[in-house]
Structures are given as C-alpha cells and as structure tokens.
Image 1 (cartoon, rainbow, N blue to C red):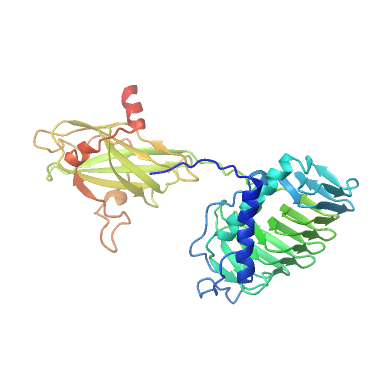
Image 2 (cartoon, rainbow, N blue to C red; image 1 turned 180 degrees about the horizontal axis):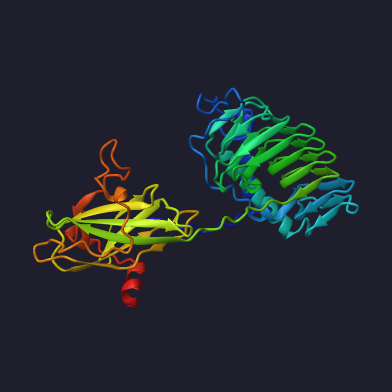
Length: 423
C-alpha cells in the first residue's frame, strides 16, 4: 500500500539542529556522513579508472526545497569580481552583504537576509543532513580525476575529494541517475572537467562538503555544492549547477554559474492488445497473452495486470518481446470478458486493451479459438517457457478463476468499467 506523506515545514532552529547533528557525526568520523567503508572488488575503480556499478543506487533525489531556486547562496557574503554572470537567484542569510554587482550580472532576483533567503538556508540545512544520512554505496580514492563513476552515494577514502583532469559521471541510460559525493572538502584543479554522459544530469549530482570547496581556474564543474562553510571559484570557472554555502561566503572571479534544471524525459505512449487461446482437449483451460508495444511498434517491458469480468486476477511482467502470459483454469460455462492493463513505467505511459469476449461452452471447452485483436507470433506462445533452451516466455502461474478467494477480494478496475460502459 502506498502512503503519501505530508509536507513538513520546520523552523530555522530545528533545521540548524539537524545540521549540527550531521556535523557532529562528521567530526567524530573524520568525514562528512556515515562511516566510509573500503571499496570492495565490485566497487573499487578498475585498472582503467572506472568505478564499478553501484550495488544499491539511491534513486530518490536530494530535495533542496527553496534552495533549488538559487544558483548562489551564502551565509554571510556573496562577493564577485570581473565579468561574473549568475543565472538563477542569489541569496544571503543570515548575512546581507554582496559585492561586485555590477560589473557582475545576476539573471534573476537577489534576496538579502529576508524570509526567502532564510527559508532557502533552512532547506539547505535539511538537504545537507539528508545527504549525510544516506547509506553509502562505496568509498572512492580522494583523486577522482581520470575515473568514470556510476550512480551511487560515495565517500572519500582519505580526506578531501580532488578532481584533476576529467571526471566522467555515467548515468547508464537513466535520466534520474543520482550521484552523491561526500567529503570534508572539495578541490578541483585548473582546467579540470566534470563530464556527464549517458543521461546523467547536473541536477542529480550533489557534492556534500563538510568544510569549504575551491574550484580551480578555468575548470568546468557540474552539480550542486552543499558546503558547510565557504565556496571559492577562481577565474574562468564554469558551473552547471549551484554553489550553496550554509555559514560562510561565496567568492566568484569572472565565473559563470548557471542553475541546473532536470530535463523532462517525455513518456512514450503504449498500446496493449489481448488474445485468448483455448485447447479443446483441455476442458476449462484458457491462455491469455497480452502484447504491449510503444508508439513506434517496439515491444515494451513492464507489469501487466489481467482482469476477468471486472475482477483483477493476477499480474505478469511483459518480457523483452512485449508479451505477458497467464493461464487460467476451471472456467465456468458462460461468456467471459477479459482486459489486460499495462501499468506503465517511468518512461512509458500506461494503457489497457479493449474488452475481449470469450464464450465458454457447457463442458468448459471453448468451441474454437476466439478472434484475437493481436495474435502474437507463434514463437511468443509456443511451449510453456519453463525449461532451459525453450522459448523466453517465463512459466506463467496457473490457478482457478472465480473461486471464493477471488469473490472475497473482488475489486473492479476503472479501465475495465470504462470499456464496458462504452459498449
């Protein structure tokens, strides 16, 4: 059962106490967040400098709350020199000082020690503590330059994270891939680069820094820095993300900071069609096969629910060919109506089949295979898929329809009612 929680509004004192607790843990352990563990063989960087696939990636993003609107946020002062350009809000709280505007340019609003900046700092404290509490995926060497890292939550094995050369963040084709890096400090070398590949997005990259962060001259950086104290960006630095300092200053020298935003990945439409097949030699046995395709006729994999006469029967995942199979037994003699519904995924929209009417004879045998709106290819229905070397369809579960168990938990699917009422 899914439980939808309530939004929580916390006071500044509460937020700061959470942050203080996280910092206490960080000081006790010598780093920010939970105790780092040595990278195992599955997680340690390989010979080519590639970090292994995260064994337990954390898909839930670190919510920044009101701080998400800010490109630059400081506790005391925001000071810029040269032709600095900040796209996104700029805020200071509890301080109220800014310097260097102009010639520095802010494409957005500036909030100085007001309720907006104060709320942003409160939410930054909550986000900082949230990142600190998360279970770590692995520990990485302090030098991240020259490596490729998969999604995960990473601690530094020894001291500050450093980026010399190029760090590649590989999203593995997932636009929601999350990267969290936690260390007492962060330093990037001049002309260093954080590169995003295979769907990785700067909005999902978090750098939790227990002290200060320093970005080298001419470096190209990606992600949101959540620093406990201060952040410095040297001349010519480009930031795709956010520079958020909780207690100290943010100093920028001819720097370009662009607040990152997650690109919306469009959902592809799907079509679900249902076919039923009877074996005259097996009284009361019926095989249902759902075929799910995308708008481009490509097969779609995901959960498919089967309904009989408005009652949910079971769920079976569609495979790589887009087919989901279910076998039902002991069907009473009458005309039955079946529907298959594809639940959808984070990339595919849900869809439901038309109502398929199946007459069952007095002896529980279908008089003939009913007309199918989308009969799958023979390879998709041959065999039971249970043995090695046979077809790729998994062995479906077989059970009795319309028994006492199903009558007791009867519930009607809204798509089924919609199709039935439309007839």
